Length: 447
Image (cartoon, rainbow, N blue to C red; front, side):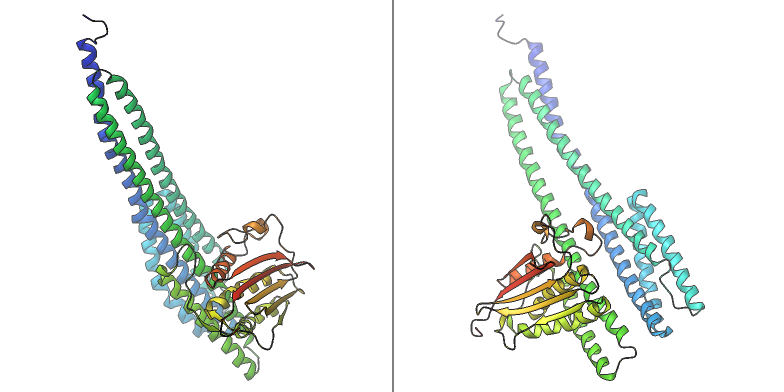
């Protein structure tokens, strides 16, 4: 017998190896797909609904603390009706969150139980304050917010761990597939038609793995877009809420004329808040953190005056001088008045945030005939050079300002400027402090 020819036993052994490898390669995608779907279903069925219930709870708590604050500021317990009205929807949100937290295991259920305890303790403190008619409701509220953050972090951690498990399964599948293909290739030196079959199957598995990866990346992109939208709305509601609160407080003891000004400020700010809430419902108009705009002829002078009027209560509260430099006439721009006001509010709000008491924030408006320039300069500490390249990244904050906001304001402002065909520039003023300049093209007929 020719020694170059394999024996019958060697051929049978090679065939067995090839068959076993084929069976393993056929079953591997089914096993890994089942495990991956199990991990993904845990996220879809519990993590996302759980986070929605947590956001609902946070929203209800915000309404309650607003009612309690009004009761304390006005010393009128009639405002407590808003607090008691939110107890039932708050309980429903807690019940929904409890079911999902229990399904996700101790990692989420433990911080949820802590949230229950802190919430119950705060409710008890509120009841005692109401019974004693001592309208002070801050006791125990900060631990409730901290517990909500821990539950949210637990949900995020569970979701991250799930993604890591899916990636690990994909890596196991990939390396196992490679090993089996190599083994089958070596064993099929005597059965070439089996080798060809294995190569075809390996190509099929590779295509399936790539398609699965593309689908996973698309899903992650949608989640990021949704989180960005929620972050944008949460960030932009904070500033008008502060304006409303301060205007309400300043109405006490003020003259009728001043009260009328405060009421107008509150109404104007409320309308802008309604517009921001509508943006959350109209998610199809948001793409990659770029905000849609409705273009109409807009008077930039009116925008500056309106926004500065809204921000003056905050500036007075912080003992900061808010100055303006506005020409008597300026060409109109084609754009969205609310969005431009939103951008200017973000810049002035940032300037007030980083300017110490006794400082100055200056808002200037000018035009070179083809562009309108909105410039906001402060006398704060300025911007470190290493931070300048990161200012317009979403959710980025310098370490020393990590607790001063969500890190979305400048990203939103740049999106608004670019949506109007303009731009934004950040720099340090020669005399110190930060300087932000938004340029927007003027309306051609107006120019």
